[in-house]
Every structure is written in C-alpha cells, then in structure tokens.
Image 1 (cartoon, helix red, strand yellow):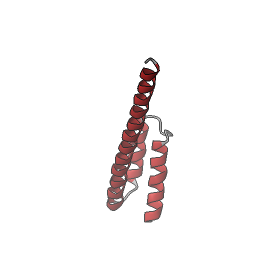
Image 2 (tube, one colour):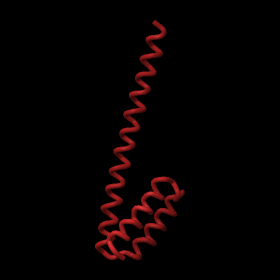
Image 3 (cartoon, one colour):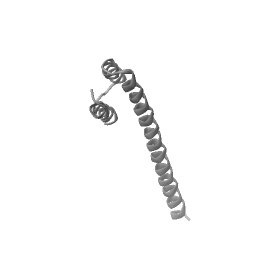
Image 4 (cartoon, helix red, strand yellow):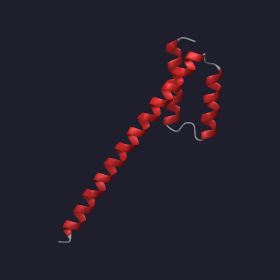
Length: 85
C-alpha cells in the first residue's frame, strides 16, 4: 500500500466518522481494528498521528462553537434586558 493510498483510506474513514456515517462507537472501533490489521507499523504510527490531530481539530471546533453560542446568548440577554428599561 502506497503512502498516498494509505492517507486516502484514512481520510475516507475519518470523514465517515466525522459526518456520522458510522453510527456507534462499536462500529468505529471495529472499522479501526480492521484498518489497523492491514497496516505496517509505520502506517499505524501515521494513523495514530492522524487520529490525534483529528481529536485536536474537533476540540477546536467545539470550543469555537461554544464561544459563538455564548456570545449569542449574551447579546440576546442584553437585548432582552434593554427592551424592558
């Protein structure tokens, strides 16, 4: 398996995970185990790096969504309080 083919497979798997195509954690674990069984040690290391980076990226997205939601809530609260005065 070439590096580009490996990364393409990982990207497809990551996309399917992030877009909810794989519904349960059990399926995600099974798919990861099936993929890992076909990989060399170097490719497994690369997969771990990809998973770690994906986790960090998701964390950034969640933090951004919280900040935007909190800002919106504060604006709504200020608007509602200013209408009553």
